[in-house]
Length: 184
Image 1 (cartoon, rainbow, N blue to C red):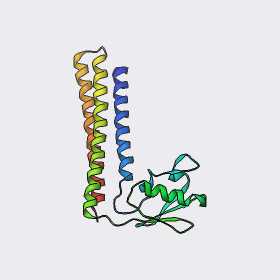
Image 2: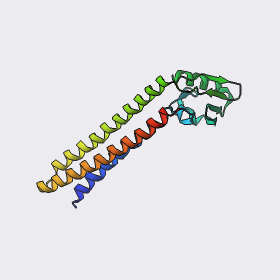
Image 3: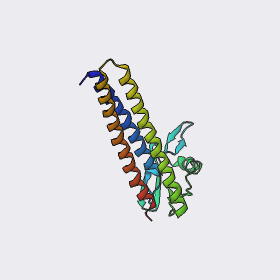
Image 4: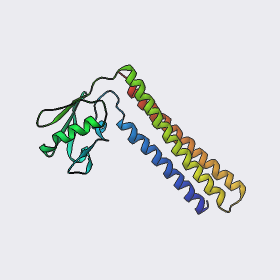
């Protein structure tokens, strides 16, 4: 196979892999019934006038399936962390006991489960758009190179096959997450 074609296929695959990885990262932050440290993954705390990810200034753990525990490395950061969690608009009510911040994760209502499922579906669709963009870029690059038309058609078919396999992976990833969200 031509070196240019291999490069185009590799870059398309790389783009599709990054779309899939981004989807998996986003789905980890969507709550699915039990408490996980990833639920606070997007929380940024004002740490000496710099917005810093919570995980870099505190230990975040889950002592049980309904509780998240945040233990800051500096006790004077308790109020800032508490404020950041409330400002993150995650629907949590943090409780500060002077040493750690405890967050009780309430069970999800049916309506909230449906909303989270819709949010997960939107993320899956966003990932599919990323996959299609990678396919479009690859097909445009194929049209630019100087090779026989039948080789171009075969290469485009390979790109489409790659696209189909990644779309299938996205659908599988979404259905696993949806099942996780909808399980009471």
